[in-house]
Length: 363
Picture 1 (cartoon, one colour):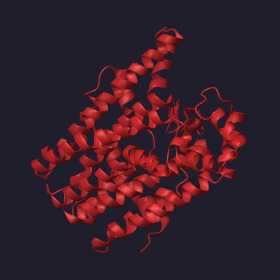
Picture 2 (cartoon, one colour; picture 1 turned 180 degrees about the vertical axis):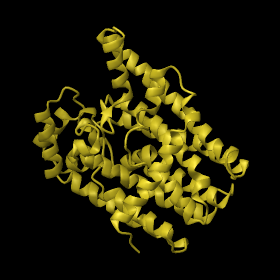
Picture 3 (cartoon, rainbow, N blue to C red; picture 1 turned 30 degrees about the vertical axis):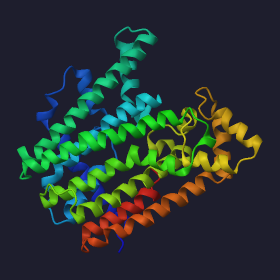
Picture 4 (cartoon, one colour; picture 1 turned 135 degrees about the vertical axis):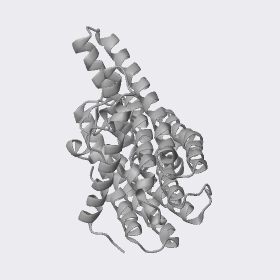
């Protein structure tokens, strides 16, 4: 069963617009003050994005026979939950660009320098503070949006409460543990890792929220608190695996992607010293001289563009990228049979197309 790419992108865009429109409801805009916080909260929302997590939530809802409109507040909640993690992640990684524009901390710092007469250091601290506060607000907003499933829709309150508890306990702690490991790994020797450790970290950072998105969509579609429902479990297992493959592809694009298409810096993972499967396999295949070159640049925040380019070439030559690509394809292959428990439908077709997109995308 296959869906033409053009149909998939049209379906994705349709759901992206539904979620963005919900988040931009005038009712919400009045909540945020002062104006700089309001602008920061909406900064990434106002930029074009894939919105893959809310899309898969809506598709999962439809795949079990539910009405997508009942799940729109939850889809918006997942998007906002993801957004606060991006704001904080950008700050942790010192990234300047996100979705083709400045990151929240960078934009706030520029405002402080240009319009508030702050010194360089004062402006940097101010940008950091605004980014932290923005993420805090967005995280709270995500919970409020989930409440709308029952307050404004027909989802049973106990279903909404179950979803809030899952998000604020299991998902939050899993995601933060993954981010913590990512930070810790960057300071440890490459040779001390194995692929399973790296994959576990990537799943925690990315796969867990995809897993939740599908389970939430299915539970809303079925209007059930049963987290062990076989269709909900199958969908969450499917998206959990696909989420890990998505992150592997993200790591590849972070090395060899087109910066304009991505809307964020290429090569920053090298400067940050990220421990990815790409660096693992490249280092495994490297000569002592090549290992020394990799160690000299990975994690070097002052590395020049020329040094970055040489490391990129090494990662290609030593098979780090090709092996990671094969790994992502294998994971998607393992994920697809999870959907066998679902009846054939347009939604199932779209979910399978979504899985293929996770590892074929170039943005």
